[in-house]
Length: 257
Ligand SMILES: [Zn+2]
Image (cartoon, rainbow, N blue to C red; front, side, top):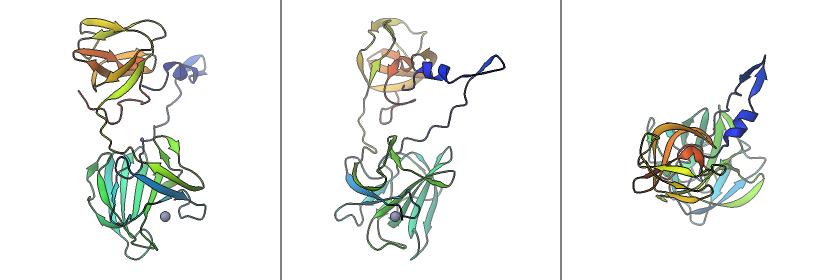
């Protein structure tokens, strides 16, 4: 988990003497660089781009290189505008009003209605539409409006050219976290829930390796209320509500148990 529970309490509003929780903003998806794991691409932003916050990606000999989904979602457009505008482009609906665009493609690898995850190949870099050379034109939008691009929550460079290295679809297999209980040792259970037997404790501040995550009983801890449990060994589970992992909810790339 990432967000500290205390911050939620602080943002509560006292209205007419009744404690009303502030309505949480819908979290943006964790967008990743739209190329396969480990690849580095030069991403350019410029104020005269249309739309302004789009990123044009290039690397050496990029014609035909695979373009991948930057976050899970549903493909809702696979369109060929011919020799104008985006040319061949794909749009993914990520829910919550968020969508991404992948334009000037050479060809398509998905169809409308298809569910895609991180790293899914959507098509290939091309120079279709109003393009003068091979590149990927990439956009993130919220409720249809062009927004500044973020990868793993970090804002892209505006304005200029920067190298972006993809961790999209990297199957790390395991995750890491740090136990945060404000002092008390955290009980380790034999299964994903408070009803399972105690099989030991881990001290506050312990760095743990998380082999997989699963859903179990709901626990309120340092980072809020969660049903997620982290498996830190064979028959050893701890409540994710007490573990700092850098992710709200499940950790990308870590499998379900
Ligand atoms: Zn562009």
